[in-house]
Image (tube, rainbow, N blue to C red; front, side, top):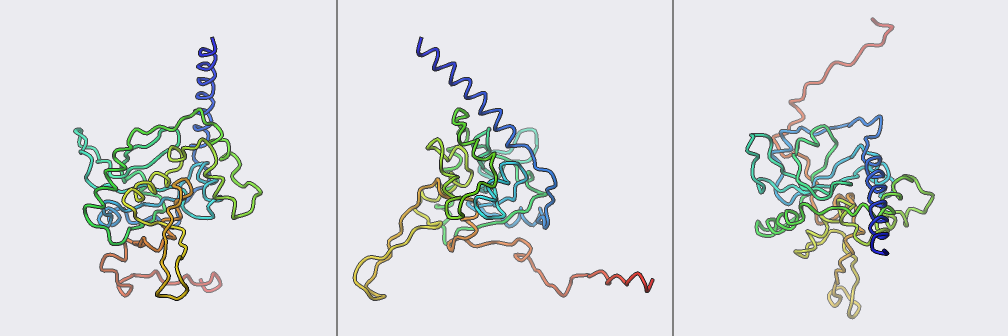
Length: 265
C-alpha cells in the first residue's frame, strides 16, 4: 500500500515538474539580439571542445542572467563532426547542451544563428584531450532531469530575489543534489574536470614565505557552482571573436554618410 502511495505521489510531482518546466522554457517577450554573429564565419571558427555561450531568451534565462550578473544564460559544447550526419540530408548536430525538461541532447548549430553568442576556447589542449572532453559529453546524451525535484524549478520563478550578490550563485546550486541535470554549464564543467583542466579554481599557497618557496594548490570547485559566465571570466579560456579571426581590415568598411539635420533638408 505504501509503495502505491509513493508511486502516485511521484507521478504527481513529475506532472507538476513538467508543467513548471514548460512555463520556464517559454520565450521572454522583447528579446532582440544586439550583435548576432556572422553564422558562416562562426561555423568556420569553432573547434571541438570550444564552449559556446548563448544569451538565451527564455523565462529561465532571465533568472540565470540575474543570479550570475552576466549576459550569458546558456552554454553548449561544440563537438564538430563527431556524431553521424542524418540520413535525410539535414544538418548534422554539432552542439551538446542540457535543456530544462529535455535533458542532455545534441542540437544543430543553426539553432543559435540569430542569438548573441561567444566562443570560449580552452588553451593548450591536445587533440587527444579535446577528444576526451567531447567523448565525455557524448556519453551523457540522454541524461534526463528528474522532474520530481520541483524545488529546482520553483527557484527560477523568482528571477530577482532580494539577496546579496555574493549569495546569488549559491541559489543555482541549491536543490536536488544533482544540478548537472538542470544547469547546462555544470555538465560542461564536469567534462573539463575529467581531464583536470581548470576553469576558475580556488587557489591557495602552501609552504614558506617567498615567491620561490610557495606552492600553488588548485582546488577543484564543485561542478554545481559553475555558471556560463565562468568560461568567459576564466583566465584559461580565450575569447574568440570570429570576425577578427579572418582578414579583418577596418579600412575596407563602407560607412553610410551622416544624416543631415532636418533643418538642412
